Image (cartoon, chains in turn brown, green):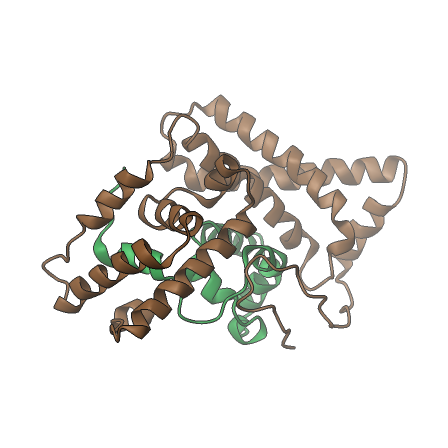
Length: 230
Length: 75
């Protein structure tokens, strides 16, 4: 197993060109690539098979998440799966040259369908909901108190974090951090409302978190072990 | 609006301590990461920073869980 160098601590940065030599493809992945890169009937049939594969993946994702969407009817979920599969086929065909053979082709393709289905579900769940106003969110954070099972340090930490958010972040960082971390707004939904992208918002979130951690370190506030464990 | 416990809120506010990749890199590497996991290899050594990102990004974490489950089912 080889190790690859990833661009760490740079959320939102362009992917680095990975310097690995492409491995030899498994037979199934090679057949997918050959058929999708040819022309005529063979390609049409391969695209139809790809659509069927991605439709199964989209339905798999929707089945996993449907408990969070009890108000959606079965036919609405079917439509959502079909839309996700359609969009995923377009993404796979557009990015075929990105497939490096580091996994099976089917696993690589699945992720496009899962992403499309997950994003559509999150947006559907929030389509009639407003992002809470910052004051409202701030009040929720301000009223957070340690529970009976929390140690006293949790209260100190909460106070220091509130101070760091109020005084150490830019307005945009504060808005993004509070919406994502306190209100639990899905990142795709927030990106959509702010005219941004998931990658750009995560970079903002990452920067805000670094600033908060630096703020706590400057004040000598200890982070509980529970916080640093995955 | 769901109510979050203080600890959960603090985890979300402070994020992972370890260096992490961003969402775009996570998506680009997720299929390989999952197959390494399913093969019993140390995916965290092969792709450093990805696990930390999954800890800090709920959306990518959900997609990782789904891809892992789907790929495992279809092996």
